[in-house]
Length: 245
Ligand code: GLP
Image (cartoon, rainbow, N blue to C red; front, side):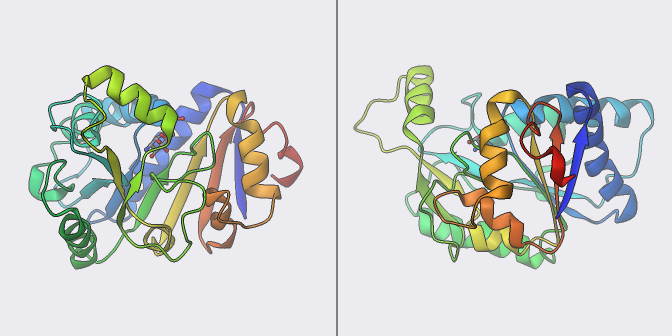
């Protein structure tokens, strides 16, 4: 396992940004999977800023996000399509043809999942998947208990996140909310994965992910088995795993 510890949060953000830029420079037709949340915000801003100042070729890059909310309009600021457009895809001049995302509203989500996965496969599969770490060990929106054999599917949201989305959108309980996410097996097929986690609130989950058993109770623990996964942490998140770096 490759574990990299950044000395400060800012170093972490810059190093994470360079994982994306490095991939684009190395393989200009890369298919790159992103992830939303607090962890990736600064990293996206740094990539955008470097591109603005020192433009590199993004004309053949394909982007997507590992997951997306369902049953909410794309105009909701919390939808992954909108977040990634605003944080990175627009800045890098990526048109919709090279920004693969499922629809947020559909009457056939099974078909949306199939199409999402098929479009990625047609592009040659995932070269790099950037992954955040959920507070309960989820990756994408695959909650604890998700079978490791899962392909792209609609997972229930975790209750904390769901409550927040309902509060922000005013969507009532009569509308089912979910998270369309690459499955665990789909994620594991990525040629390279960079799991990023920062902050002391992630330290215990980082310990369980790296030092605990590989178990469906902690979805991120499956990454111990990936042949090309880097765990990029800041010093706070790495508190209990410093001996492994
Ligand atoms: C959400 C996203 C995940 C992300 C996680 C971490 O659940 N669906 O893809 O990895 O949040 O979020 P944060 O970086 O805010 O801790």
